[in-house]
Amino acid sequence: MLIKIKVLIFLFILVNCKSSAQEIHQLTSAPKISIRGLSVVDDNVIWASGSSGTVARSTNGGKDFQWLKIKDYEKRDFRDIEAFDSNTAIIMAVAEPAVILKTKDGGQTWKEVFRDTTTGMFLDAMDFVGDYGTVIGDPVNKKIFMAYTEDFGDSWKISSITNNISVADGEAFFASSGTNIKLSNAKFPVFVSGGKKSSLYFSSTSNHILPLLQGEESTGANSLALSPGKSLKGIVVGGDFAKDTATAGNCTLITLMPFTSQQPKTPPHGYRSCVEYITENKLITCGTSGVDISTDGGMNWQLISKESFHVCQKAKKGKSVFLAGNNGRIAKLTW
Image (tube, rainbow, N blue to C red; front, top):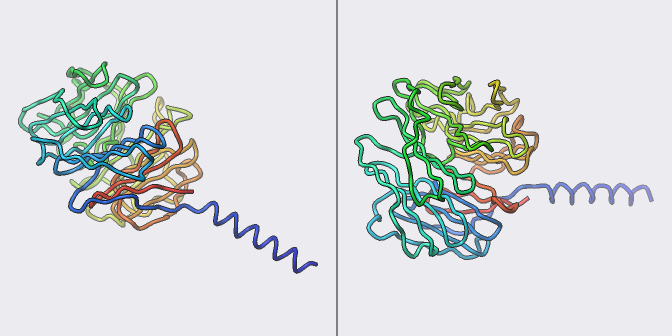
């Protein structure tokens, strides 16, 4: 009898360990396409954007994807995307000329809603709260570029929020996953920089040096996530993409107003280009050297895969989590 009880206990533990494991399942791929833009509307609608003027779209949770090449923009790299539903989305192209396109018919046609031909222009990331959105670009003449929209991206205006911010030489923003800027609940932008100086900005005059690896062009912050439970808390990841297995200075937990930072006890296992809250305590982060999960608010990270991904996103209205990266790889996280 005692032996049977022990066997039952062992099987119970085994089943529960199996059910709590995390796995990444690849859904689709497209050779030679690098995907860095990802927007998940709900558990069914997924949009992604990347190099060679490419956009991918699924309306059935990733079972099938429609791959689109945007006419006249086949040589552009769309590093970020914001989707509002199965038909409406905005994509952002880096480098000169900086352009933003919008579709209202599921990607069949696109309209250019923003263009800037300024020398040195390089857009990095977008974020939206409802109809209000903001886009950030690398500094031009040491001044951060920022624009905003109040009509779901149909029109854009240059923002004055960053007028009084002067950045250091070699300080900029990484267009690695479209996630280095977030809008707070009050629609105020919070953003992080990288390069030879890595800072967090959350007002027109306030900035704080982040305790991340910095000093080289390949170092610093890449991604920011704000807690869904308390918007004054968040997490920043980065490191050195030129040494993507190094763990030093690749993650910090933050609070805003007043600003504080705390290093994790167990950091992610290498350079990370994107971080996302799944719940208030569960997070996922990814980079070229792997994917990590945290179940304690970002204090300890567990490596679940050595596969390379640039971006990870949770459904805005749902629970599904997807990842994307090189060779058009789009995958889903299962618990």
